[in-house]
Image (cartoon, rainbow over all chains, first blue to last red; front, side, top):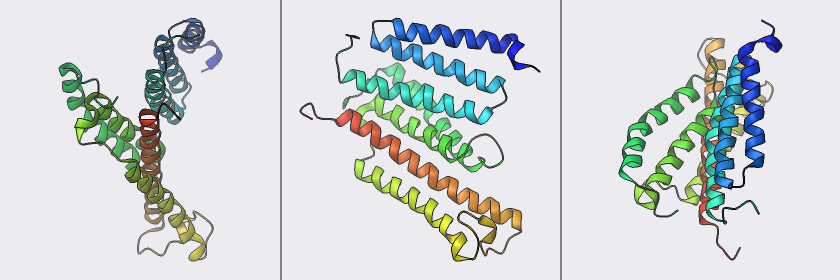
Length: 83
Length: 144
């Protein structure tokens, strides 16, 4: 299987790019955290498609769960706007 | 954050998920050497479970891990890792060389036992560190 032309891989890479741009461009920090969690899940799925199940596991556990919780906790201690 | 988010729906959902998350974390730690997973991922899952209960129930949960306990957990984990690693040089092998351990088992089983001990150490350390980070984020004083 050539990963570069796998339609599933291309779809998830495209979703990752969309999520990354969205996370950078939204004004509300809480929305950015949620979109960043979605980015982490898509990248975990992409790793799993490539066969790196261990990396995908780590990305899903750390990137999507723990990092999002820490960001939310940090945002709760500040005011929510991006400026 | 001390009072938690605690709506009844969140409470019921977290009660349903918590035992399975703990079980899955322990499974990932124990089976990490021959399937995807390992001490780091299992420790993250266990810490995520503890943080979930803490987020939903707040301090009323009785699951609150004091920072002192988290530090003890983290040091115990690092100590288990370094101790099992140093058993290798003590018994005439290399650092983290499990095959040098003088256990009355087959060589493959000795390697599996050493690797399991190291994974448990890593899991304890990761759980302690993540709890500590969450504690620091929640408890940080405004004048700091």
